[in-house]
Structure formats: structure tokens, C-alpha cells
Length: 136
Image (cartoon, rainbow, N blue to C red; front, side, top):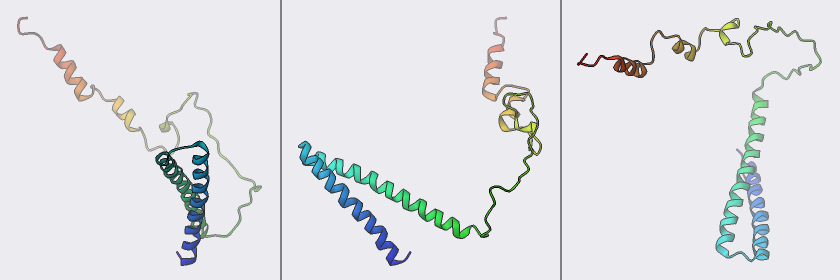
């Protein structure tokens, strides 16, 4: 980043800080707040204002970088005809992904639900409950 850009960014923060501090000090004087409450309020509002400024500057930086990385300068015609292939209804309210073409198979939850036995902890508890007492 060049010195000019750094000074512009610093200028935005300084200007926002000056405006915010002035408004909050005038507000605290009108409301009769003690200096300690004014300081806490000022710090809280400044953190929020700085976060908002940082967010806008980051979004602008990322957008500028994305434009330079995009590669081709060809414009996409939004009115060009397109063909969309829609699969027929499966009859299920929420079809599983393995019913669709190109699916790798069952997901982890489906694999574990198809196990022949309970989970190890539940299986051990079930076997423990089924043990015969020594008296019988």
C-alpha cells in the first residue's frame, strides 16, 4: 500500500473519531453524565464506528482485488438464452443426495444408522442389562 492510500485511510479514521468524540462529549454534557460514564460510552461507540469503517474498507479492498483477479473482461449477456436441466420429482419431501446422479453414496449419518448393532456404549449397556443374575 502506498503512503498516499495509508494517509487517506488514516484520515477517514481520524475524521470519524473527531466527529464521534465531539457528538458524544456534547451529548454527555447535555445529559449531565459523569466523566467516567462519558469515557466508557466514548470508547464503546468508537469501537463500533471503527469496526464499521474497517468493514467497508475491507469490502472495498476485496472487491477491487476480485476485479483484478477475474481474468477475462468479457461481459456476460444477461438476456442470452440458457438451457437448464431440471430433474423430475422424486416423490419425497426432502430427497436424499444419493438419489441424485453424481452422488458419491451414503453420508456418514446414513452409514452409521445402517450398522447391525447399536453404538458401542449403548450396545454394552444393553448387554449388561441382559446378563443373568448369578442366583438364577
